Image 1 (cartoon, one colour):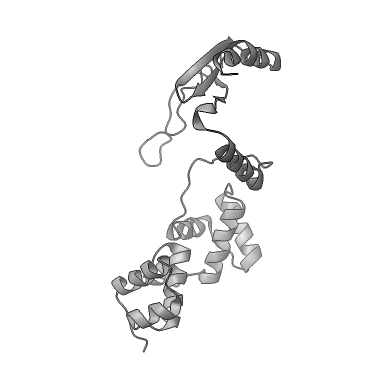
Image 2 (cartoon, rainbow, N blue to C red):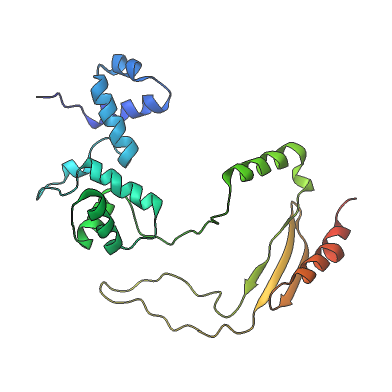
Length: 224
């Protein structure tokens, strides 16, 4: 029967590994086999824990094994906006196991995956170009030389909140304005000294209005 180690020993394995110690050195320091170290680190990388959360759950036999869990996690990374029924269909295609939406939700909970508001990043964005831009700015410019300009808009729907609370099995309902109303655009120029220029206009900002803002209000406040 394999020897059982306390959670304290398992977490010490993780701490030493994060500090840069090799598997061989950790094995010598803690008198733990390398196989055990690999197993604990695998749990930590997968679930941010030192034990298998699926194995510790009591009750009926689990449908998904560790390989299936990895497939589910990878599937969420590839497409985080999938619905539960879409996940069930895709898991059936990849693993051959048909499960209910409730089962999918339960395994997501086991893996620490929660449902939250989606952050949208531009598909055209390049991490390489972003890194090169940051390196160029940090190398050739001082903080006091930088001015940041970004437009922001407001209408009657801007202050509407996206989430709310209600009793279980009841929708969270609030009466809000559906008519957009008058739209205003704010165009600030921000430096280390705060906002140095500002333009507020009704409607959207056009190319001509933006160029005029730069020439008439931003450049006069900058050093030649």
